[in-house]
Length: 132
Image (cartoon, rainbow, N blue to C red):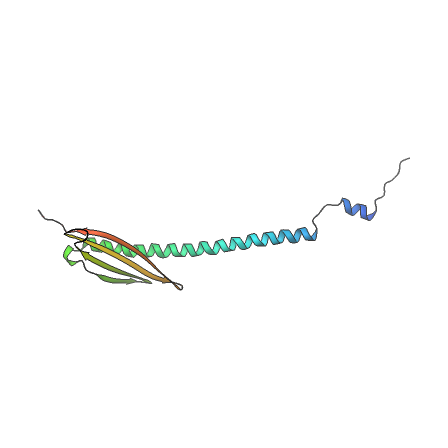
């Protein structure tokens, strides 16, 4: 009494495995949200990288100015304004600060990126060389 089991079409479909359309759509929505978050992070990283490049270039300008001031004679140190590309450096020299025979040099470098203004400030102190 060997009976052949004949499956109906409904029974055959019930045993087949796979994804339903709803499951596929939900996974696509989750993937789209993740990709949008990654795109947003990429934009933020590009903006931060651009700002870092500007800060580096502005810092190089300040270093060049301060190097020149270190080479100059103490009595010739005066305020000045220097421009390079999109950067403008304003140098102020204050006499006898913090003490006598010292000059405080402050360099403020400004630039505009997009519709925002940026600036960095550096300072140093130069002393008058005492000759023996």
